[in-house]
Amino acid sequence: MHDDKGAIAALSFATDERRTCFQRSISEHAQRLRLMATFFHAHAKRLGQPSA
Image 1 (cartoon, rainbow, N blue to C red):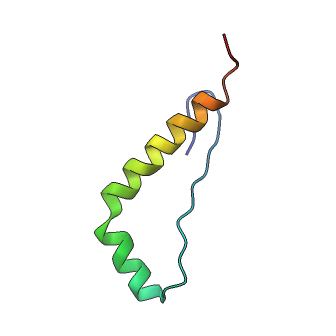
Image 2: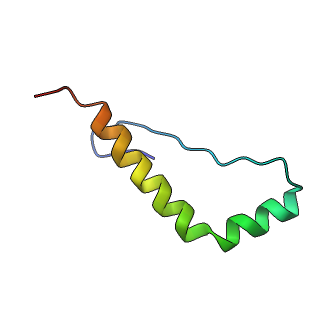
């Protein structure tokens, strides 16, 4: 993920499940995972800004 200022953030989802189970889980929860990643990115961006 990156913003208009060039900042980059990454979020990874991992598991010890077999690939087919993991793929199915990702597909079933794709919208939630996207939302979580968006909130994570916004929070990380706020943490990286200097205090006013």
